[in-house]
Length: 132
Image: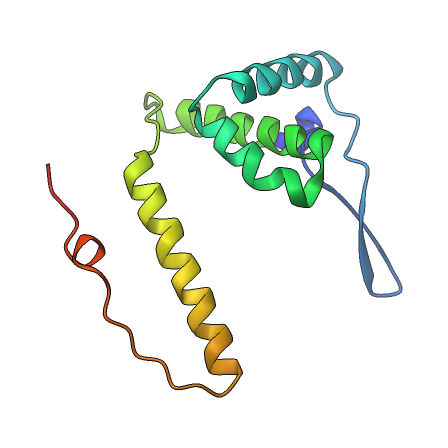
C-alpha cells in the first residue's frame, strides 16, 4: 500500500551497490493528503509521530523524516483496516523502558567488542516494572 501511495523509501541497485533513490510517484492525491497529515501529526505535542520524527530527524533530515512519518501513518491505517481494530497509541512508559534497554545492550556490545567482561545488575525500577 505504501508503494502504491508513493511514500515508501526508494532504492536503486547497480553493480551490487544499493543506494537510496526517489520514491515512486504513486497516487498524487493520497501523497498530498499524507504529507499534510504527517506534518500535522508531527506538530501535535507528545504524539507518537512527533517522537518518531525527532528520532529520525538527525539521520534523515526534515523532509525525509516527515516522509518516514507519512509512511508510518499509512502503515498504521492499513493495520487498522486490515485487522478491523481501533488505533491504540503505544504506552510512553514502556517505550522509554524499551529505549533504555536497547541503549544498555548497545553499550554492553561495544564494551565486549573492546575486550571487557561485562556483568550488570539492572536497577530495581527496570528489574521489576510497576504493574498498574
